[in-house]
Image (cartoon, rainbow, N blue to C red; front, side, top):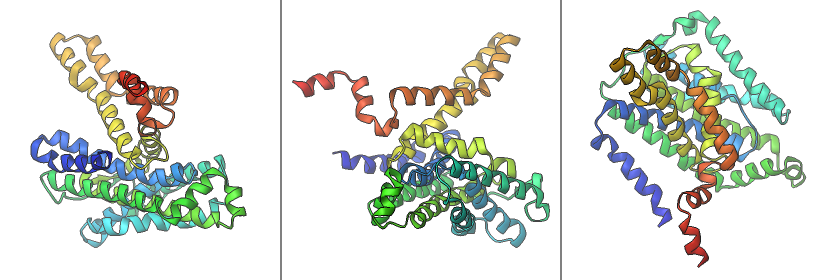
Length: 336
């Protein structure tokens, strides 16, 4: 029965925009799918290969700018960015990984952090090419969110399936061996530098594809949006941690949870405090509503602390443990 659960979920997701025609909820699901692709990419390099990276913003922004620049300078459909955005991100990842994978542990993480800042400054300074802080604006291809929904769903599904395929291949075993003990992997004849490069480029490709889709969907980008350390790189790490580092479906669960938590705070508990402020006219309530709408970082922090304390392997990694806490009688039945 368990093997049919992903298929059932996929069918439900395919029917979602038909049943739920509210554009707001469709928008949230599109964001979830984009984060599934980003989280899956980060999970390959960090979760399965053990190389913690803060470089997702660099790859995401490169993919987004690839789509935007094609439309802005060459008057080519930004959808071609979906074809080239992943490869453009790999073009950034390859020389970076070639140099920086000689570093280990926190040094590589710090180098990936610097990569984000380098890309952001280049996009800000190179105004003739990128429009700088003015950003790039394109006209949306579709008025309805439904086409974007199915394109984003396809990207999310392909990301999960591709990662699952890779992890069942020889590459996947090499990645895991590097994560567990790099020195032992090298003693077995595994070219750890090469396979860390492979892992990084897979992550960059998926993240670059997500960035290109984001450009097409949102229609506007600037350096602060797509090269944001907090909104992209840190969010990608949180998606992996919450869902389950080193699990196939962890990024999908983590993306759903993180988007829901972000929206929960952004809307003031789904409009509760804004509604109370409108009803009472209280200045204090209005101030509380504004404060809560910007407190999603606090929500993320609380969630991460709870997961680390009670579900150290993430929701998917500790699923049986979580179910056992929610349905304690299941343990009794198993014992009897």
